[in-house]
Length: 414
Ligand SMILES: C[S@@+](CC[C@H](N)C(=O)[O-])C[C@H]1O[C@@H](n2cnc3c(N)ncnc32)[C@H](O)[C@@H]1O
Image 1 (tube, protein in one colour):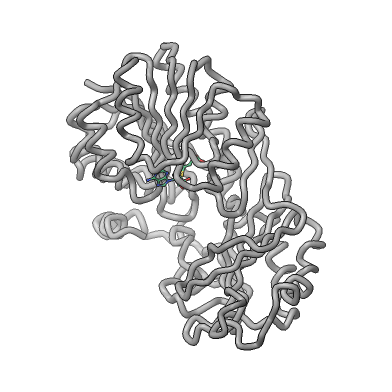
Image 2: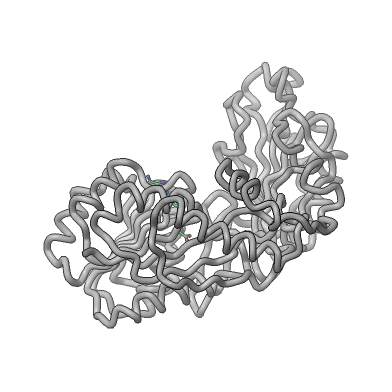
């Protein structure tokens, strides 16, 4: 929970007077803490979030037009990805704020039912494999993380992070990759599993990423959303709530339609595997679509997604957005009236250089999708408000039971 959100709740105690029993069996205080709003009824959560938006707007001096607030169609078992820590003491989520303490067998009622089921099946396999789990204090041990992703069909993709087996500190037992493969093979026969990857990490930092050393069956899942086929892996970004995919695409579509213009160029910055750009390329008649993303694996999936959907007018660029700004300047200057830009940065928002770029160049049409609206309000009040008005705004409760809110802002330059 952010400091500002905490302050808002403190200033508005009447909003949090009535509590309910959280669906989490141990509750957010003793559990991992993600579902910190689950101690309030869903209508109450929505009221809290709407009032928080108004409070933020006032605090940052942002004049918001009348906004739409969309509920999530589902408030439990909506998440398509979970990452479970493997400790000698057990496998599960960690206790809130305690990196050293795992809650054995603790999943989350926000995880999809397919993830929940395969989590319990997988921990049986991993525990009975006899492969030692990684000890975060001594740095000895092999099994580190189990990441599970699911799709709307209930298929699951697993990714197991292990220590670098060549490092004697991690692996004094002399385990070989083939031993690990043999012992975890039963994971591949679990009913919902369409693929399992093993990743090897040579870092002593507690991270789940690593180099892929083995793939059983396949390393991707498929989704069909509004007639578009997408493929993605456990590591690539894909919107987390399986029940709001359409809402994202409909909202962008409505914004674009409301501008009553035939844009020539769409630039999708922070594009991931092309969730927005590939759908929009199909839906509208852009001459060029440019998607910019920094992660190589996401780029590969974006290329694949463009191919399977037969999108031929898309250029997929591997670059940090801040390193792409000079190309973007030329692009916007060549057709300022007919270029539409979408940004959907990670939680930390736009980098300083990118924010300055928008202030100085002020491209005419900008859609800002934000999973951290506090950050958006801050950036808007400090920088973007000098060049832009908020023409339309939609909020989506994409993360029920948590304090997070997704915001879609249609900005036009003034
Ligand atoms: C919130 S996700 C949005 C992805 C996409 N719009 C979607 O809905 O699936 C942000 C994406 O931006 C990428 N990213 C983060 N910082 C970046 C940067 N500075 N330059 C380029 N890509 C970046 C991340 O890897 C991630 O794929």
